[in-house]
Picture (tube, helix red, strand yellow):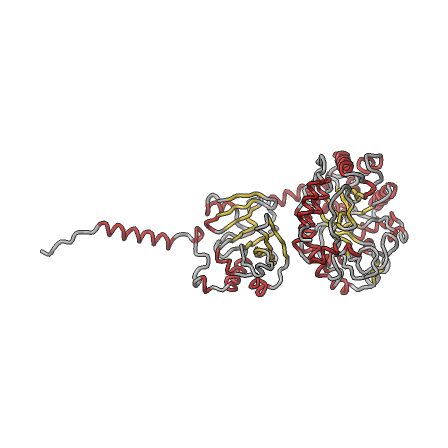
Amino acid sequence: MGEVRRINWKGIIILVGLIFIGGFIFFVSPDDKQDPFEGRPDNHKTSGMELLQKIISNAKEGKLTHSDIKAGETHVDVVKGKFKSPDEQETITQGTYLTYHNQDLSFGYRTDGIIFDVRSYLPELLQIKYDTIIEMLGNPDHVRYYSDDEEHDQIILVYDLNKTYQLKLILPRPDENEPNPSLHHTSVYTEFKKDTEEELDVNRTVNDRLNEMTLNEKIGQMIIAGFSGTGYNDEINDLLQQYKIGGFIFYQENMTTPQQTVELLNTIKELNDRNPLPVLLGIDQEGGRISRLPGNLEKIPTSKEIGEKDNAKLSYEIGKILADEVKSFGFNLNFAPVLDINSNPDNPIIGDRSFGSEPSIVSRIGVQMMKGMQSENVIPVIKHFPGHGDTDVDSHLELPVVNKSQEELNSFELKPFIDAFQEDSDVVMIAHILLSQLDPHYPSSLSEEIVANILRDDLKFDGVIMTDDMTMNAIENNFNLQDASVRAIQAGNDIIMVAHNYNKVIAVYEAIETAVRNGEISEERINRSVERIIRLKRKYNLDDRHIPYVDIQKLNKKINNALKQF
């Protein structure tokens, strides 16, 4: 018999173990942790452009390159089932974010559990440079900025891929030290419009509130009033208690000191407690010479000076500061920024209130200031549509006339407004300007052609439209105030501003009420405006809570920090 070989059990056990491990690696679910780019060549051979192409292709379908979680469809329970407990969890205004460091992934979901944002932090993204992005995709549709400290100053390039998805590319902000930074992370984002229970609940709430309101309350919501005095008086009481006025504009004559202003705002909020909606409290706090808040606040540069810097991030930060100022006093609405283009050197009203004489500057800088205000939960009112920059008279004194076609307006005056609409502006103010080629009879604020046809239908703006002050001479020297206010609503305005004279406020209110009773304005037309106003106040979570005091020293410190670049 031949020699019997002894079995090497130790070797067999090791071999079986290696086979088992190899099989596990081969068959493991790709959703747990697959190679980020299946079948890709060595990272050093993969160009940033090729990588970016893969990212774009997947993003158009709502996904990342290394995950099948789909924005707008996948539920957060699926994410938790795949990846278990997150390494980090954070709830912010937009929703809740779950971060998985080992997967290089982060997911944002809203209260209904649907994922709306999927983010990738793959190391391979460092191959993609800023110049590559611009070369391949061109200029972004939107530019935003984020900074949580001096070491994390980021630029966010946003590309609208289709009607459903945006691709956001987040990088360190280019500067003289690093003009061509590498991509830090990506986000595939959707504002999905499915009829989720949350959205249905919002619609039901808005409709229920609207149905509960009397005609008296609805008309009141459509007026922003001025008032006299610096404290509680019968005018304020009547406007709130009897006429249910939905908002107030404050001028310097109403404010003497910071504490007096805070107390007056608190009084108005208290008197509004029986009305159906929180009260709008607005002020012109543009910076520069139009800065109405009292107290020894540090000066904010003029819009012209800000535009000359041509620094979008700086404008965003100043927008935040302006919002912080008004919010600290108890206001919730700022009649700013000015998006007029200062194209006429003889213009007596705009001047240094404009960011510049070119549409691109006004648009880029003005929109970022608007977004800075929104980030602080203060409502910005962009003004003065369709553009007050090429006028040579002051509409406070007389009616300006501009002889331009719609094509000329589209290519110049309207550009900043169009860009603001695309960036989710909420409120636009209509100027009193006679655009003789578009409507030879009525100024823009009273013109159905301009408000309903151009602004609503052509430009697709569905936010709140308000008039400039109807007591300006541009209106009162040429029209009956009551008739003009009725016509402004018929033209498509949602809010009529009557900024001076208690008796004029009441006259406008009664004229609108009579027009509804007589059938000149349908209650359905009133309802459309009030629904927009309800949605606006809900979006910004307005309430009538009191502000105890304003810390001027703290505000000045913030202002000085924001203006270091000046």
